[in-house]
Amino acid sequence: MKIAALSVSAAALLFAGAATAQESPLRLTFQTSASEGVVMVAVFDSEAAWNGGGAPAAVARVEAGAGPVEAAFELPAGDYAVRAFHDVDGDGELDTNPFGIPIEPFAFSNDARGRMGPPGWSAARFTVSGPTAQTIDLR
Image 1 (tube, rainbow, N blue to C red):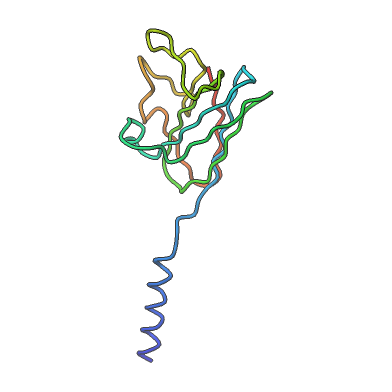
Image 2 (tube, rainbow, N blue to C red):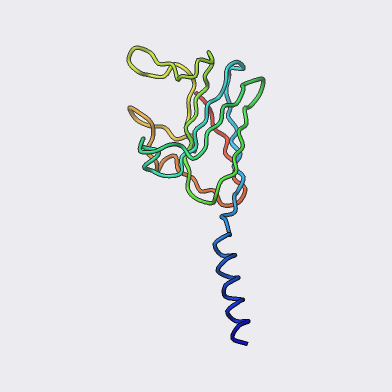
């Protein structure tokens, strides 16, 4: 009887270590007025990464066309924020004027807006827990 209890405990430990976090679908729909180029998307999973202290948790490059542009991700449950821009000329960069102001459409999750720069994490943050969708207007 004691041997059976040890076997069950050992099996429970093995399977507990093999368990992974279940991922949830995130669908982002971008409204844009241009039909050429690509929409570049970066999804961040922490305030530190959002503020430049790390890499995005996920990225996508989606061809633009007639109608809305969609990007889909599978992410563990948690808090996220999105930055995106419509690279109309396809050069892989967000074009800016001489003052550093973007001249290509850009946006953030929650349609958050910043003052003199991107919005803070708290304005763009949203929770993924189960299927999640957002529509974001690129302006």
